[in-house]
Length: 53
Image (tube, helix red, strand yellow):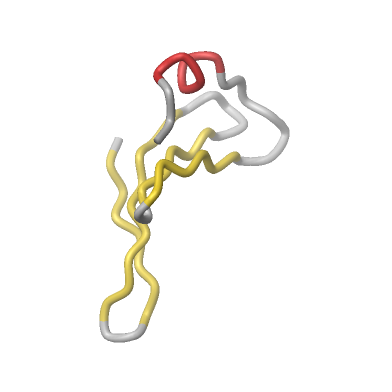
């Protein structure tokens, strides 16, 4: 589980960062400073990603 303070203090870096919350849920922090929740899952044997802004 990601603490709220860690999410707020995360700064953009040169490369995108993935902060995992467990169970496939992660926060993607882009180099431009955008923060997006994503969910990684498998369907029919293929990995998929559900995007949520």
